[in-house]
Image 1: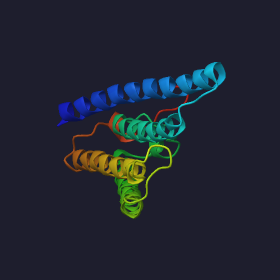
Image 2 (image 1 turned 180 degrees about the vertical axis):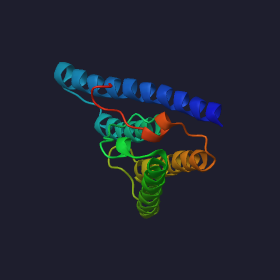
Image 3 (image 1 turned 45 degrees about the horizontal axis):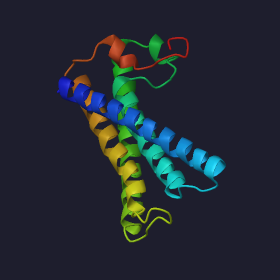
Image 4 (image 1 turned 30 degrees about the horizontal axis):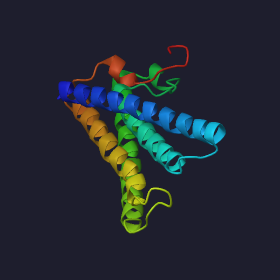
Length: 169
């Protein structure tokens, strides 16, 4: 299971790199066309915005799975192991609830916007909101996996902290 997650993260890292390259090409190409040739690529702004949103949600999911979000452990670092495990479980249950809310909202927006087309590309706006659906499902799977590891006693003390201080970066 761990290697499957690692492969998915590597795939999403590669996709994010390709997306970033696409954004740079779209924006730079549009700037070059506007100032150099007095024309433009109308699709550029819209597509680069959509690709950026997808890239951010994919990156947030990978960061969640790898425990790379910034945080603080001022209280939990002083607690005994069992109390840290309880805090870990409570935090993950709350994050699962937020994933559920995000899934409901993103799904509702995607369904509402299935027949709405974007002005420049003509693509359904539902593709934009599908990024929230993707993230909420991916994040929920990661959180459920971490809770399962906690309940089976497979998490070490270091994995219970899942916090990166700004000095650690």
